[in-house]
Image (tube, rainbow, N blue to C red; front, side):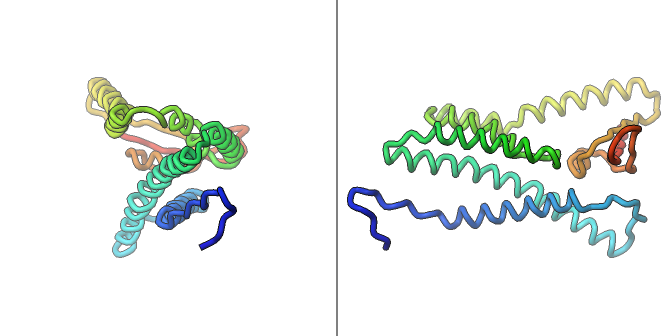
Length: 219
């Protein structure tokens, strides 16, 4: 073991399993971003036979093994690393919260720079929500459990589902047997496809530097 000067506490060892999980999460995020960035979105004939089965398997793996797992794991490790840092510094008698908030501010600025060339940035989200971790660090366990249960209920998604249900009823009462079609122009790639939108073609308006994606949704 390494020697330390007298009176200096030994440096805490890194938790290897967390480093491994962090590397896997980052690898998954890189794969997701590579899919979003390097897909040319050229019109392709529909696949048939084994090619259709291979495309379906690849889409499933991309959606459920990378998109839904990598970002969730990375977010979990972000919060866990926050606790480990503050807890270890608190054992030394050091209040690490101010320094951590400074790091959050730098992370937010880095995220802003990232948004200049990618519109799916999450660093700004971490930079903002990280301040909630600082505010909740000393709160009681029952309160934290209640907040966790509220987050698991996903109230925003629940309200969005109710809104969609109400809109669907209004449309069905007005369309007189005709399907209602909605169009959406966006630069996002796979986000809206997870919610029933279908990619139609690339479009470009007057004065725009590059083309955007046109999605359609039928109710």
